[in-house]
Image (cartoon, rainbow, N blue to C red; front, top):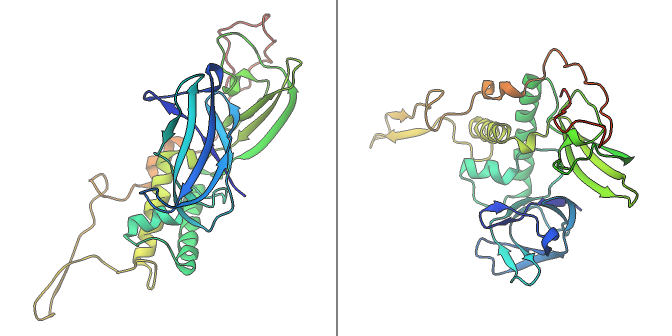
Length: 288
């Protein structure tokens, strides 16, 4: 069983219903964009942190599904149906792209056969390996849980900000979830390391290059070799399309577009431990 973390949007902005007495009530999966045939449903998203709710997804066959998420913005307000969500399942495979996304680039119709899905998964893993070698770090973070820790609390601080917690790491850190224990302390789930699936340039690079490798692989999914632009009436001559130059519209992204995410050869010095509020300054931030 996989999970999906949902961030409600209301009035054109990300929104957290719970403080206003609202709730995220259900997620329904459909088999087409028309959303007429229901495949499965799950109820009551669990609040992870401010503005983020987690659904435990039902077991369904691999493929693309169109969703409707229903939530109540606040107490007494009519429910809102969010139809902007599309999921390529299963999730949680450690991949930043899905076979369906690569198939879209190749122009291959859905649903995918099991053989095509396997070939596209292999192409995605190869593209990710190239990115990991260039960045010098994996694209999948590790989950780390700290129990009974106290935030550097001030009224202005956000508990979803990793700098709010006494947790030091030389790598990227995100707060995945936090749970109050009732005594002023929290159990906090951190994601440590680069989360490639949340970095749009990484997703675009892996998707585009996985598609291009399959297009040019003999017998690959959607393979057609070089792109043919025209063939003479007698079939005696063939003209091929030239690929757009780097930087032109339609060109494949180059790996140096990911340079800002490369692992640094030095690590910043950690700042001294921050005392808890009210003894700490509200202007303090860690050295990460």
